[in-house]
Length: 177
Ligand code: NI
Image (cartoon, rainbow, N blue to C red):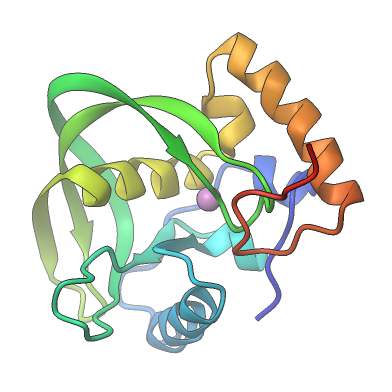
Protein backbone atom coordinates (compact mmCIF):
# COMPACT_ATOMS: atom_id res chain seq x y z
CA UNK A 1 0.00 0.00 0.00
CA UNK A 2 1.15 3.54 -0.66
CA UNK A 3 1.50 5.87 2.29
CA UNK A 4 -0.34 9.19 2.13
CA UNK A 5 2.11 11.96 2.91
CA UNK A 6 1.40 15.39 4.45
CA UNK A 7 0.10 17.90 3.43
CA UNK A 8 -2.37 15.63 1.61
CA UNK A 9 -5.85 16.78 2.83
CA UNK A 10 -6.86 13.13 3.38
CA UNK A 11 -4.81 13.30 6.58
CA UNK A 12 -6.95 16.15 7.94
CA UNK A 13 -10.27 14.28 7.71
CA UNK A 14 -12.08 12.91 10.74
CA UNK A 15 -12.56 9.19 10.11
CA UNK A 16 -15.86 7.32 10.27
CA UNK A 17 -16.43 4.46 12.74
CA UNK A 18 -15.92 0.95 11.36
CA UNK A 19 -18.68 -1.59 11.12
CA UNK A 20 -17.25 -3.95 13.74
CA UNK A 21 -18.45 -7.10 11.96
CA UNK A 22 -17.00 -6.02 8.62
CA UNK A 23 -14.99 -8.98 7.33
CA UNK A 24 -12.95 -6.79 4.98
CA UNK A 25 -11.22 -5.25 8.01
CA UNK A 26 -9.05 -8.37 8.39
CA UNK A 27 -7.62 -7.98 4.93
CA UNK A 28 -7.16 -4.24 5.43
CA UNK A 29 -5.36 -4.80 8.75
CA UNK A 30 -3.09 -7.41 7.18
CA UNK A 31 -2.14 -5.13 4.30
CA UNK A 32 -1.61 -2.22 6.67
CA UNK A 33 0.63 -4.27 8.97
CA UNK A 34 2.70 -5.35 5.99
CA UNK A 35 3.07 -1.73 4.92
CA UNK A 36 3.95 -0.66 8.47
CA UNK A 37 6.76 -3.22 8.80
CA UNK A 38 8.07 -2.54 5.33
CA UNK A 39 8.47 1.13 6.24
CA UNK A 40 9.82 0.38 9.72
CA UNK A 41 6.95 2.05 11.53
CA UNK A 42 5.50 1.04 14.90
CA UNK A 43 1.98 2.15 14.00
CA UNK A 44 -0.10 2.92 10.94
CA UNK A 45 -3.58 4.41 10.83
CA UNK A 46 -6.11 3.71 8.07
CA UNK A 47 -6.16 7.30 6.73
CA UNK A 48 -2.42 6.97 6.12
CA UNK A 49 -3.27 4.49 3.39
CA UNK A 50 -6.25 6.55 2.19
CA UNK A 51 -9.00 4.71 4.11
CA UNK A 52 -11.09 7.06 6.24
CA UNK A 53 -12.07 4.51 8.90
CA UNK A 54 -11.40 4.46 12.61
CA UNK A 55 -8.78 1.76 12.83
CA UNK A 56 -5.04 1.44 13.16
CA UNK A 57 -2.42 -1.27 13.51
CA UNK A 58 0.53 -1.08 15.87
CA UNK A 59 3.40 -3.19 17.13
CA UNK A 60 5.65 -1.65 19.77
CA UNK A 61 6.83 -4.99 21.16
CA UNK A 62 10.43 -5.45 20.11
CA UNK A 63 11.56 -7.77 22.90
CA UNK A 64 9.90 -10.89 21.55
CA UNK A 65 11.69 -10.45 18.23
CA UNK A 66 8.46 -11.54 16.55
CA UNK A 67 5.99 -9.59 14.51
CA UNK A 68 2.80 -9.32 16.49
CA UNK A 69 0.68 -6.51 15.06
CA UNK A 70 -2.46 -5.52 16.93
CA UNK A 71 -5.42 -4.04 15.06
CA UNK A 72 -7.40 -1.45 17.01
CA UNK A 73 -10.92 -1.04 15.62
CA UNK A 74 -12.95 2.00 16.75
CA UNK A 75 -10.40 2.78 19.48
CA UNK A 76 -11.16 5.21 22.30
CA UNK A 77 -8.94 6.39 25.12
CA UNK A 78 -11.04 5.94 28.22
CA UNK A 79 -8.46 7.01 30.81
CA UNK A 80 -5.07 8.64 30.97
CA UNK A 81 -2.69 8.73 33.91
CA UNK A 82 0.75 9.74 34.92
CA UNK A 83 2.67 12.85 34.09
CA UNK A 84 2.74 14.52 30.72
CA UNK A 85 5.90 13.52 28.90
CA UNK A 86 7.46 15.34 25.95
CA UNK A 87 9.28 13.12 23.48
CA UNK A 88 10.24 13.23 19.83
CA UNK A 89 7.86 11.51 17.41
CA UNK A 90 8.20 10.57 13.80
CA UNK A 91 5.40 9.66 11.41
CA UNK A 92 5.36 7.69 8.17
CA UNK A 93 3.17 10.44 6.72
CA UNK A 94 5.62 13.21 7.68
CA UNK A 95 8.93 11.74 6.51
CA UNK A 96 12.23 13.23 7.47
CA UNK A 97 11.32 14.98 10.71
CA UNK A 98 11.05 14.31 14.43
CA UNK A 99 8.75 16.57 16.43
CA UNK A 100 8.50 16.96 20.23
CA UNK A 101 4.97 16.13 21.38
CA UNK A 102 3.57 16.26 24.94
CA UNK A 103 1.39 13.31 25.92
CA UNK A 104 0.18 11.58 29.07
CA UNK A 105 2.55 8.75 30.03
CA UNK A 106 -0.15 6.09 30.42
CA UNK A 107 -3.49 5.47 28.77
CA UNK A 108 -6.23 2.91 28.77
CA UNK A 109 -7.61 2.26 25.29
CA UNK A 110 -10.85 0.45 24.56
CA UNK A 111 -11.22 -1.04 21.08
CA UNK A 112 -12.59 -3.95 19.10
CA UNK A 113 -10.35 -6.65 17.71
CA UNK A 114 -10.72 -8.20 14.25
CA UNK A 115 -13.10 -10.83 15.63
CA UNK A 116 -15.42 -8.16 16.98
CA UNK A 117 -14.47 -8.65 20.63
CA UNK A 118 -14.36 -5.58 22.84
CA UNK A 119 -10.90 -5.25 24.38
CA UNK A 120 -9.02 -2.95 26.70
CA UNK A 121 -5.31 -2.30 26.90
CA UNK A 122 -3.44 -0.43 29.58
CA UNK A 123 -0.48 1.11 27.82
CA UNK A 124 2.61 2.95 28.92
CA UNK A 125 5.89 3.99 27.35
CA UNK A 126 6.11 3.64 23.58
CA UNK A 127 2.77 1.82 23.39
CA UNK A 128 0.98 4.73 25.09
CA UNK A 129 2.66 7.26 22.83
CA UNK A 130 1.98 5.25 19.70
CA UNK A 131 -1.70 4.69 20.52
CA UNK A 132 -2.24 8.41 21.15
CA UNK A 133 -0.39 9.30 17.94
CA UNK A 134 -2.44 6.87 15.84
CA UNK A 135 -5.70 8.01 17.43
CA UNK A 136 -4.80 11.57 16.46
CA UNK A 137 -4.66 10.42 12.83
CA UNK A 138 -8.27 9.19 13.10
CA UNK A 139 -9.27 12.70 14.16
CA UNK A 140 -7.44 14.33 11.28
CA UNK A 141 -4.38 15.34 13.27
CA UNK A 142 -0.77 14.85 12.22
CA UNK A 143 2.41 15.76 14.08
CA UNK A 144 1.91 19.38 13.04
CA UNK A 145 -1.49 19.67 14.68
CA UNK A 146 -0.40 17.81 17.83
CA UNK A 147 2.73 19.90 18.45
CA UNK A 148 2.89 23.02 20.62
CA UNK A 149 2.73 26.23 18.53
CA UNK A 150 6.47 27.00 18.47
CA UNK A 151 7.36 23.39 17.80
CA UNK A 152 4.81 23.36 14.98
CA UNK A 153 6.50 26.29 13.25
CA UNK A 154 9.87 24.59 13.54
CA UNK A 155 8.42 21.30 12.33
CA UNK A 156 6.86 22.94 9.26
CA UNK A 157 10.20 24.53 8.39
CA UNK A 158 12.05 21.26 8.91
CA UNK A 159 9.46 19.45 6.81
CA UNK A 160 9.90 21.76 3.84
CA UNK A 161 13.62 21.07 3.98
CA UNK A 162 13.10 17.32 4.40
CA UNK A 163 10.69 17.08 1.46
CA UNK A 164 13.02 19.12 -0.73
CA UNK A 165 15.81 16.71 0.25
CA UNK A 166 13.67 13.78 -0.87
CA UNK A 167 12.69 12.27 2.52
CA UNK A 168 10.86 8.94 2.25
CA UNK A 169 8.33 7.35 4.64
CA UNK A 170 10.20 5.68 7.50
CA UNK A 171 12.87 8.35 7.72
CA UNK A 172 12.68 10.48 10.83
CA UNK A 173 15.64 12.73 10.21
CA UNK A 174 17.13 14.02 7.05
CA UNK A 175 20.65 15.26 7.44
CA UNK A 176 20.59 18.52 5.63
CA UNK A 177 21.87 21.02 8.18
NI1 NI B 1 1.71 9.07 12.18
